[in-house]
Length: 279
Image (cartoon, rainbow, N blue to C red):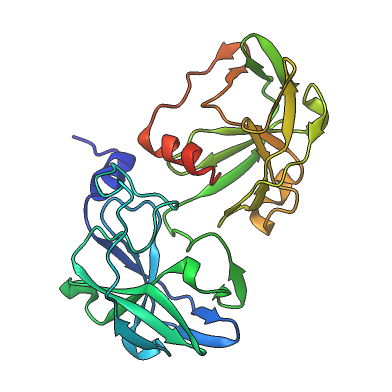
């Protein structure tokens, strides 16, 4: 019987996973280099969607002190999936947490050594505890990039209509379609094809593959809604075609493509993306 690869990846989420990388990876705390390695690994703890970088202990240039802080108790320990909104210190595999002292500063619980023979000798670092990060000489934002995660941007000519409670919010025959591993197809439409004026908001999130997302608001039935769409005003190079285009959450609106109404996504992964708004 043939194996669908997506199902294999889903089943593997319950395991501790790792993958070596040949990239030179660096983590800094201000001007102090905390880690610098060409032998790093990407590590996914059980149920974690996003990986952490693990460094050979000899490539970590900081003092590691066993952490005495209690692990966070935010009700997520039994969550089906752990997304980027769940703290690094919430570990789902056995091991030892460490405080990191570097550059005259301390980052509590920002390092972890898993009790697993395959990654023995590696130190996992909390991506959000250090800044900046580099792969080779390119800065990375949001989280480490997953080598098994693709983002394909394709120009299309399908007719796309976005509705909410019967009201047409946008309509276009010149979308960009974004096919991203494990996520619903997203339709990015030119701003001029959105019905109504978009207003800027202060909300921002970061995608490691596309860049900084903004969340403009749109007046819908007399109500200003800032939870329906997002845009990349200055995307990263691979997503340059998406500059200033607008995408709507398939989960919150009705998407009609060439006259066919698409079903709203219901996967657990899609739900965590909406919850975290890390699109």
